[in-house]
Length: 319
Image (cartoon, rainbow, N blue to C red; front, side, top):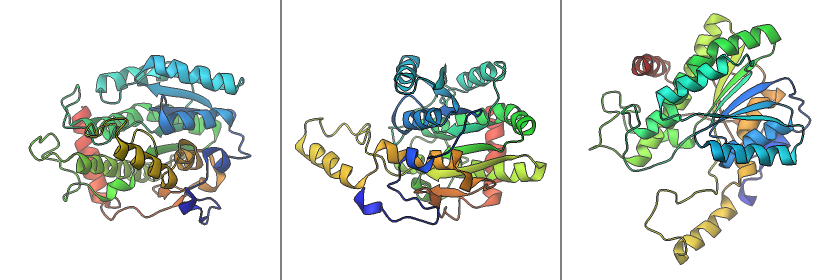
């Protein structure tokens, strides 16, 4: 990561870590939901938020892995408040169950970090018969945010503290299908291209945050919504590439070289933690971040009409 040390206007860079960008922040009294917190940058996000005093609810598909992460965090930080709840973003029923259980728990909700995701698997359908990347990376999070909004609004009003919704997107949002969102061909297997489908789902994440921002401003709600690129992380690089065996010398070389230029998990979680907790981001909404600084989203991602069309399309899908 020595290639990316140049600091931006925030005072941080792509090589900053999640601990560095939240140094000195006292977030005790805040409650956060972090999806996909049982591995990778989700785990590090949960750990650093807990380190700063946040009560973290980890939404995890694998509860055994979630319990292991909770134990590891509490072992390192005895004062940490961490809970794991089952959440499979590829299943709308699971999202509804999670939101219902959380809303009935009586917990406040200050931060919603939509982090869970999959990247470039072969064509598959979700339990709701939606293309799996669109379902997991975007649609499950769209429904989750909608079901938790009343709790977030109530928390923001009663605590007089700004709520924040953070969508973990990717610079891949610049490279979706040519039409951006394939409204009429979401489940078209014949035209499926796994990386463009990933780009489509990540474009949807940015459009979602921007439409939330518009609605919050219209309603005078004290909640911000932003999206971000976490960087390319040196984890699970070849998860869906079975053409290279684990001990293949080409794979070993590529993974070794990658670690010189790609982010580690501590750096990968930094932008999420920066947007979630850093006071510099107070009042900032509808923006796209990368390397812990404001960054440029694609022209398609900034298309307000496309964002509204996606919102209406998604509302119809989740009924």
